Length: 218
Ligand SMILES: NC(=O)c1ccc[n+]([C@@H]2O[C@H](COP(=O)([O-])OP(=O)(O)OC[C@H]3O[C@@H](n4cnc5c(N)ncnc54)[C@H](OP(=O)(O)O)[C@@H]3O)[C@@H](O)[C@H]2O)c1
Image 1 (cartoon, rainbow, N blue to C red):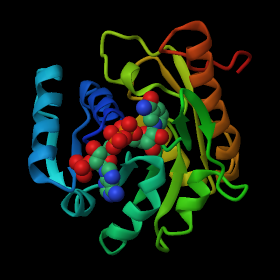
Image 2: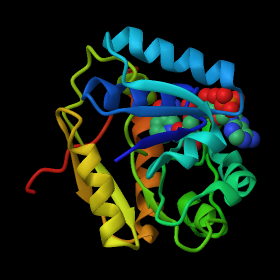
Image 3: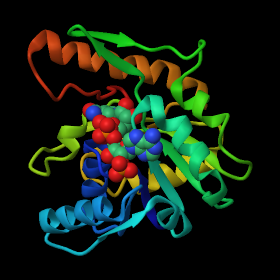
C-alpha cells in the first residue's frame, strides 16, 4: 500500500508521515511546491535515519498513492480536493484529518458546517470511486511529530465504507502504541471533531499539550 500526504508539509502532515516512515512504511509527501515536498521528505528521512520518504507535487503523489491523507487546513480542504479532483484515481481512500476550529482573541471557536462534520462537507466534493474516511482528528500534531513521545492512545476512524475503514486501520496499526477504533459511519465524525475541540480545551485548562483519548472497556 502506498501512502501519500496531500499538503504534507505542515505540522500534521509531517508528523503523520514521520510516524508511518518510522514504522518502515514508504510515504510520499505531497505539496503544491516540489521544493517544499522534497525538504519535508529530507527532514523525515533524517529523523528516521532511513529513506522511506519521497517528496512530490500533489498530483504526482496522487498518481502513486492508494491511501491519501488530506492534511491541509480545515477550511481549505474542500478547495484542495476540488483542485486535484481529476488526479484522484478510482479506488483511492482519502483520509480526512481536519478539525474545524479557529482561534479568535485567544478563544477556541468550533466552526460547524451546516450541521455536518467537516469530513461530510469534504465528501461532497470527492469523485465517485473514491472513499473518504475520517481519522487522526484527536491526536495532537506535535505529539505525532516527536518520535520520543509514546502515543499510548486510541484513534477514532469513521467512514461509510467498511473496506476503506479497514484499510486505513490496517495502516494505522503499523504505528506503535496507537489503536484505531471503528467509530461508525462518516456521520460519527461530527462527534469526533467535537472531541478534538474538547482535547484542545483540556490542554488549555491544564496547561498541557498532549491531551488525547483512550477508550476503556474495549
Ligand atoms: N495541529 C494539530 O494538532 C492537528 C491535530 C489533528 C488534526 N489537525 C488537522 O490537520 C490539518 C493540517 O493542519 P496543519 O496545522 O498541519 O496545517 P498547515 O500547516 O496550516 O497547512 C498544511 C499544508 O497545507 C497546504 N495548503 C495550505 N493551503 C492549501 C490550499 N489552499 N490548497 C492546497 N494545499 C494547501 C500547505 O502545503 P504546501 O504549501 O506545501 O502545498 C501547508 O503546508 C488541519 O485540517 C487540522 O485541522 C491538526
